Amino acid sequence: MTYWEMKGRQLTNCSCDYGCNCQFGGLPDKGHCHAVTAIRIDEGRHGDTDLSSLTIGAVFKWPGPIHEGRGEAVAFVDERASEAQRQALLTIMTGGDTDPFATMFAVFASTVETMHEPRFVPIEFDVDVEGRKGRLHIPGAVEMDGEPIKSPVDGREIRARIHIPDGFEYEFADIGSASSHSPGPVPVELRDSYGQFAHLHLNSHGVVHG
Image 1 (cartoon, rainbow, N blue to C red):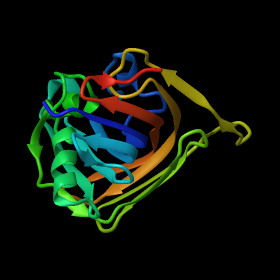
Image 2 (image 1 turned 30 degrees about the vertical axis):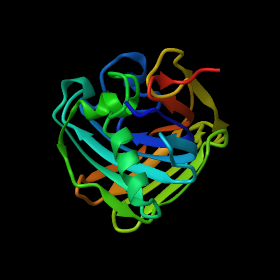
Image 3 (image 1 turned 90 degrees about the vertical axis):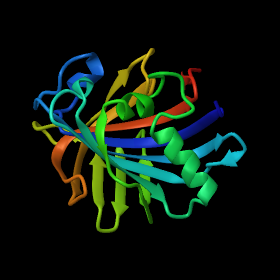
């Protein structure tokens, strides 16, 4: 197994209401899960291959709870990546070189039945985790915008966090609101639903703590 490690920032938008039952061991509140995600790798490597400053993304659709499988997905990889970087990123994103079910990449890959051909594309992505703001733009493929949750009473910004000390994705996540549009090959349309902003530190063995 080739060891890998990455530190980065993530914005994920899914079809659940704010909070997302899945984060608490529950079932998706719509009965299905549709999701868009993007990660900016601030520092990373796969063996001797440097992955720093690259961006990856994906669109997922599951007809029921994620653990029941039958998922559909497409991966997007920064077009700036070299051939070695592309192969390294796709290996990580599909659960390769990773302890069984140790990261969200490995967990989600195990539930995907239809994996479309990866796309190597220009990706514009910026995210402020603490500010709960972010934007993903993949021309012709994905648009995602994240913002703080606003109080329906007085419009003020509301900050809430989730702490999962033994999770497979993050340890802390700031929760906001997000909307996404993807025309295909995995069509998704989300509006003002769960937005997850997180600093990630992952490696071949799972979430790195401390």
